[in-house]
Image (cartoon, rainbow, N blue to C red; front, side, top):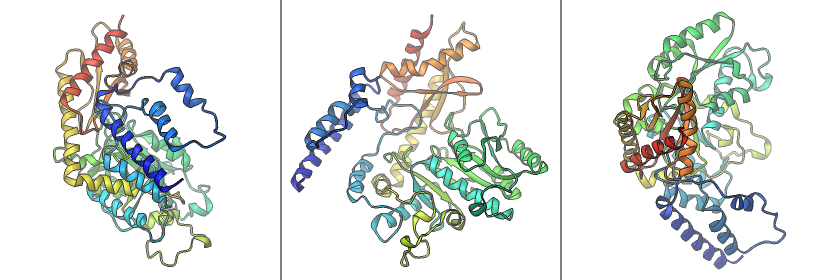
Length: 474
């Protein structure tokens, strides 16, 4: 391939991507793939000979771009998936062109990652000692990193070296969660050998937030039984309703009991940038660790999570392993990023984070987030004013939990209707919303992450929910 071949293909790719992004608002948000389109991708034969770049771009335009997940649209309200920030899209190409391993060494991506991790910590006002964090594939991996450090500290305090001896000989390590805690927490507990049955589900109030009194009682019961409480997982925005735990009382308890306080801020921690809801995050800075996802509310292209910890030594003591072939006498006091997590070969995630934050600035990011939370509160008002709909939880961040409440249906029938509604709405193609359960009730949950979303889109969402419900009713 010549330089001119690549340059021509790169320009064509830029045009293709620009057209795709420009056309998104006018297209259906999502529609099921046809059998032929699906078969084209599933049954693609391994090519014996190479194909020109122009042919590859034509295939992408024909077979891939017409079938998106939908999260680029301003009418996408599903799960917690944002549209990609344009600056991040461009930076991704440059990062791929460099293609370094961001494990360590003296090259641009290493220093840029230290900077953007500090930026992320500053955005949410979390203490950040040098080396106190790293970028990960997402909050699921960030959670594993943070839990491993918490496990290491708990074992050491019990006179045990878990890295050398494993968990054998230790009493069961106990963690505390709520029924609204993200599933990645259970996965992390299982993967690290803690066992999901050693995660205590603590009672919550009607808003789904931790009850500190119940938490304290659970810790005391486990200590009396000879178990080893070590971890509390609070939330800076639950995935179901966007609820934010009250961190102050939880942090007080953790300090008194010597427990590691981890906050799942994957989706919601960046809400701290909005002055209207910043008060909800008081005490977040007291956590021992925080998991975030720049690829959610900040719009950094997937994948990009972040693990932040207060104590750098705990993180490095958990993961550092430097074989002779990786020795770097010039690495400085902080060493390599690979000493702070599980990945040795690490992608250049920092450039797209840098570009996304630098393009919008703190002010622009705060404005975008405030726009989403204000629209969420407005959607809550629209739901409450509609006789066919019911708001199921206070709107605390940018998630709105609601359901259809058709008269004449009993509880079982209402649950069945609301369980089927999200897919019925999705298939219509005009908006995209997903469902969940809260307080034993099936519901729809609209998550607003796109600053391009308007109030008109909210009215369309509710109209589509009601129209889809009519197709499901007898």
